[in-house]
Length: 502
Image 1 (cartoon, rainbow, N blue to C red):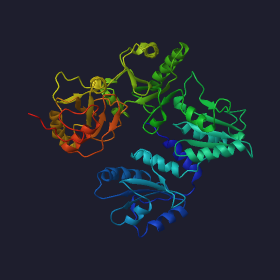
Image 2 (cartoon, rainbow, N blue to C red; image 1 turned 60 degrees about the horizontal axis):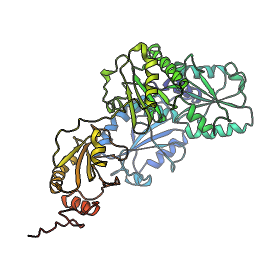
Image 3 (cartoon, rainbow, N blue to C red; image 1 turned 90 degrees about the horizontal axis):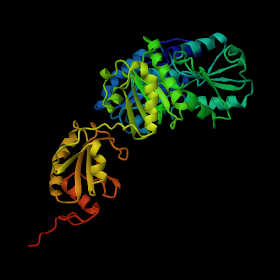
Image 4 (cartoon, rainbow, N blue to C red; image 1 turned 90 degrees about the vertical axis):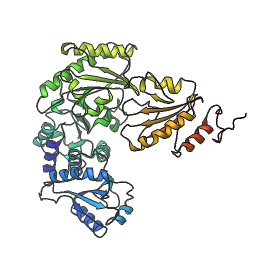
């Protein structure tokens, strides 16, 4: 995975003149927090603070990551990494900043009362890059042709460039947008003289310049803002910041929305840039031919390293060893629909991808569904998998009570005998008691499963309702008795067992 490390280090040398070594993770308490943060702000330093508890498991996992990031940032004169232990020495400070969970990361730059939430990935490289960006100005001013060329040559990500005359109204808007997106993109501002060799006619213009390693001979390496084509400068940046065939990695993966095509293979712009772009060129040509054929979908397209997204590959029943030669394509034309292309020859990639997209348009390709095999036999506690989920839950003519679980989940294991007992009591009712392994099967997007176990009720008419009550047997019986589409045979609406008349 590539980051903008080279560019960031160069920009820091442009913006920062003094060099001094900051300490590694330092401990602040209620007694000195305000004083230390104010001192850092006065010294133009940016402080990343971890609010934590000693007993917190997630905090323990984050500790070595933060230590490594701190060590990497030792040479950054304007970065401080600190920690505050909330339950003991930092209780008042944590209450002041409304810390409700551990670990919480906040960044203090200009105002002690208005820290920014740290919302980037919690990896060493992401923390380092985030803090390096924080110490830069919102916009880096280019002061010479050499400055401009060095930035362009060292960048591994797209750059937003503003070229303005004096007293430009567009410059003010550009500055405001740069302030909003400074941590996500790199913004440069320049006078016309310093960029004339690349943009001879630039005057009050905004450009997006794509990094050199992503240049393709089939397309321009920059995009110029046209106010007649885009609703705003912000929309221009969001739509065009990536080239047609983009490089998607963990730091920018949220930029790519459906409809989306991702090609997973050995993407490596350090050791094998030529081989990496060999496939990008052919993907570009395939999309060009698909568009010319009367495409029904305007896809966002990206390449991703198979090493960076093993969890995504697992979602498609793929593993790293399956992707040794040709890319595997995952096509997602809309939410919930996924198609996988992996069986084709290297020489046929262009035609194979084009035809695959055409066949998806025409409904000739079965969507991919991650699913365990459908059980041959069912007990009173029924097992649903992705392949039989609709049939069991929405098309059985019965109400359903569902447990979404993970096999490793302790709370799920504890609930299992209760669900079995419930299923036995409801064996002759028009209610399915169901369990669904949400780690081995694709979860229907109509259900929000964020933790395990998650329980849902679905009426035979398809009305979905999350269950948020108690987890004892009688709690379930009372809930189902009340919600059942038709009154139960053995329980009244209050969940009381009906008396059998002799």
